[in-house]
Length: 358
Image (cartoon, rainbow, N blue to C red; front, side):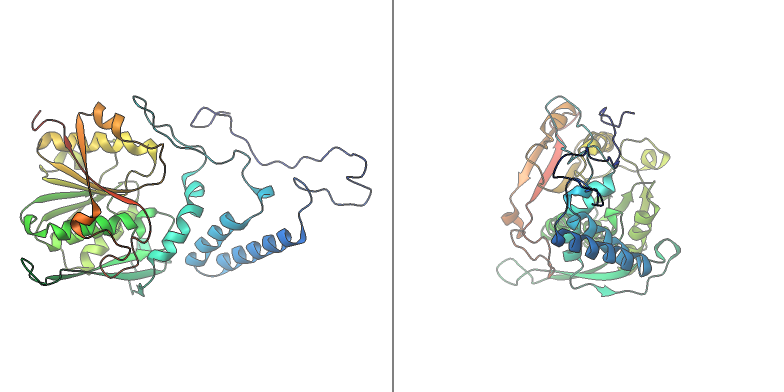
């Protein structure tokens, strides 16, 4: 049976080893990829205890327990397909990595997820879609030091965070950097039509709306939890005028066709799965056709030197400008009085049509 990448799928199977002198004797246990030392079995036992605690307590504990399993299980119990590599080659559509997305990225993102919850406080949100999950409120305070040409302004924004398998349910470093860029350019935002795609908790979109922009938040129509968290962010920040719509990248829907012309499109850390890159740019291209002078303001976290948008931008007749973080006071580990972005490498991009008009 072939997987999405065309490579044969394999399953974990237990195979009895071939008897050989000095290796297996009568009455001895059959090893799994070799006999594990006592320390490894203790680690294995610890992981099983964590998993049991996760199942018997909250969904939050279950999520953390699964992360511990991904991080600490002995190599003898790992997936035989091995680590998947995502890459983009010029002129070729990015190839999807093998294996389920959740399993592939859970271990890598868990430490960052726990870091993003530092300073968050429990909230009383209990909507049907969020019931059964630990919901916390995270506060971000954007400020400007008073001085020459500065008025010492300050903006406080609250967003809900849910420890959930859907990545859009909590704040990632890229969102704080993009929100800082909006705050830095807040004087040019009033009256601007702004759409955030893949919004999730919508920190950048909320900041833009608080600065006077006419904002629409969107996330995948196939992820109702993420759409609900968008609505909760609007409620927590007293923004009833902000619309929330379901848009799936690369899909033409009535909601997409009905969108008005946009001046700015926001995208925080959406360039994560290479298999989604072209679908994202296809959607952006469609939106920019309504206003050829529109721009995509996007932040992404550098995770692989093999990933590149260059070929796809050329294909869709777009250009990209890198914005230095120091130019908008984002070259630090703690933005808006939070623990983010930490020491992660985040890039700020402004993408537009290669020509001023089609």
